[in-house]
Every structure is written in C-alpha cells, then in structure tokens.
Image (tube, rainbow, N blue to C red):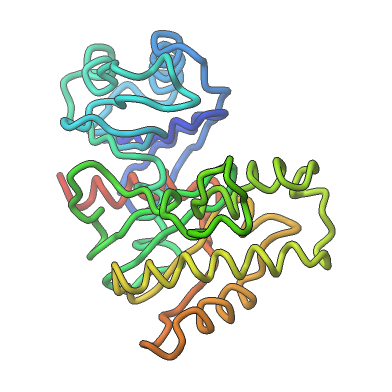
Amino acid sequence: MTYIVFDIGGTKTRIATSSDLKKLDEVKSFHTPPTFKAGIKDMVEIIKGMTDNVEAMAGGIRGLMNEEHTGITNDGKLTNWAGEDISTALKAELGDVPVFLENDTAIAGVGEAVFGAGEGLEIIAYHTVSTGVGGAKIEDGEIDRAHIGFEPGHQILDIDRTILGDEITPTLENLVSGSAVMDRMGIEPYDIPQDDVIWDELAGYLGQGLRNTVLYWSPDAIVLGGSMIIGDPAIQIDAIRKAASVAMENFEPVPLITAAKLGDEAGLWGGLAILSRRL
C-alpha cells in the first residue's frame, strides 16, 4: 500500500511516497514543465518508478483552485495548466483512486499545522512570504472553508500611498514580497545585507498585515514561511513580533508568531495530513 503526495510549484514539482501517512519514504523532484500534458507525463513516469500500487494521492498546486478542486482556473506562472483536470488525468494513468488537490500555500499550511511549527494547536494562520505573499487559515488540521480561497497578500495597507506612490497597488504583497523589494531597491533581497534598515522596515509592514490576520482569523499561532522569512538574509521573526505587537496597540494579545519548520517539503507533509483525515 503506497500513498502519493505531491507539490506542483512554478519552478519545481516534488513527489513523495508514504506507507503509513506518518512519514515521507522517498522524495523526488524535477523541473515543472510549462505545459499540462508534459507535467502529467513526468509525474506519472516518476510515480510509476516509485510504486506500482497507488492507494490514494494528495497534493498542492499554485494558482486559484476551481470549484471542484480538480485543477486551477488561472495562475501567473502555470498559465498552460489553467482549465485542465489534474485529478482525472492522474486517475487515468494511475488507477481510479482518491485524489485530493489543494492550493499549494494552503496545503503547506496544513503540513506546518499538523507536523511542523503549529503542531498541537487548533487554529493556525499560515503565511508564506517569498516572490509573492499567500496564506491560509488551518483549523483542526484542515483548510478552513472558503468560497474562493485566501489571498492575504492582496490586502490593502498603504491606503494613502505614501510608500508605494500612485502607480502601484498598495497591498501587503507589494510591500514585503521578494519581487516587490527587487522592484523598489533594484537588487535581489538575498544580496541585501542583514544589517540594512530595509529588513526592519519590511518587518514593520508585515506586522501591520499580521494585525489584520489576528483580528480576522483569531489564530492560536501565526506560522511564517517562504524565502523572505526562512532565507538568509531574511525578515527577522523577533522584529516581526515586535512590529505586530506595536500594530495591535494593546487591543488584544498577539498570538505566537513563529517561523515554519518544514521548508520545501511542507506541502508534502500537508498531503499526508490531508490523506490521513479524508480517507
């Protein structure tokens, strides 16, 4: 009996096997093809090379999920995957087994909530800060229900546009993401020294965004992942905690704010958690 978990990212796709839904047995990765057909072909070849007895599958993909959670409706990177039925394509090649598909950030949040930094807590707010900013609310190890999905990176913060000016939409993502920093500074974030004042400024912006997270979702903990948080250099967790506390203005206590633990494999661990709960 072999369970398959996967994570289809804009750059890499990761696939892993598990025999007990408690650990990852074998993990493989490859460059994500730009086209849907090539991507499914590569996934199937790798999975068949790992096992000939697939019991069930669960995984994440970047982009906005369709209503049936069988694929994505759009994505800025995986444009040629939009509108395709990933679940049906995998079943056609690997057998009519259960396939659970979720947004990649949301399923990574499940991984952190169940196996990572939020283990043992009931309500987790997971945010990833990397090229963009995403997130999801995880309750009792499951992605909270939503009509469309969660997009915390698109919340408006710089209302009077004093920071970003009139040409850029003043969202959290456009304030703290790696691509936004690159656009403003003209240099990749990983080339900016850790002692540069920009990192404290980013912590301040993120603290304001997390104030909204606390007020809207009331989580037990906020888990932060992504290259802008767990990279080197990075926005420091202590600075984020301080900024969030200042932003709350003693309105209510700030929950635990901590860095993610599972790194690039968070989505795979999330797949294990999804399978263990839904089968």
